[in-house]
Image 1 (cartoon, one colour):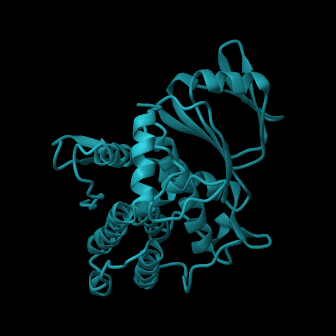
Image 2 (cartoon, helix red, strand yellow):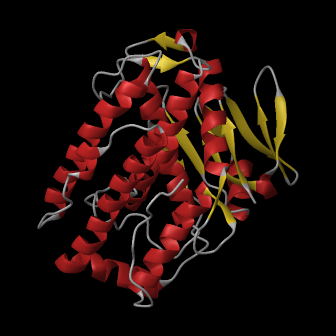
Length: 317
């Protein structure tokens, strides 16, 4: 299985022969391009024309983040999985209010189930979340339900943290350590979801819960939200409560951001969580959490084609 490659230093990606290298004044390192799913750049990185050509040949996207960990854009090779039929059917489901609402509601139900799964694993009362009814007549109303769910979840999540305080969600830039971790984790999850969507026949800009907008792949937002509680927030709780990530792993800028060491620590743990395998109840075999994102895409494809009815992930682990 291909793996992501994370770059946490400034430098240049260039091609030499049929090999991709990352270089700066301190190091030169070959990147195993044939076994790389995508490249994540958390510091300024320059791509040479040769590197871009090789990345295109191998169909490896490159995602870029700013210093606070916010996603800023991607180099995306020409899509390898393309189906006009699926894209047309996907657009038809977006344009039909009833069909769009069904899928949007499924996403919110999946978000709610993931929140419950995390809180249950930590033996925390999740009654306030269970009582929220996922109902609405428009996607905007369902977004309001999602907002209510996150508000309840943030309060319960804060009570589980042992070494940092978390009073409210803030961003652009994050004003405390926990918000810095959430923002970075959400950005990475978004790009991982985008990479998995590209392996299906889905168009990443045609979404159902989030409104499609220019310059963003909003279907990735729909899909990533379902996985946030059981990936990003699970990793934050683990690192903070075990004392693995501490105050010295952060520094103040305009807002709060991770140091280079903190960034590498958090990204390593997050990637391990995406790679962690869980027993799939239907397939009766172990699959990675990252692969579960792709399975969601396949389920949507079958739904659009009328082969089965989509039911969003209900996290069980």
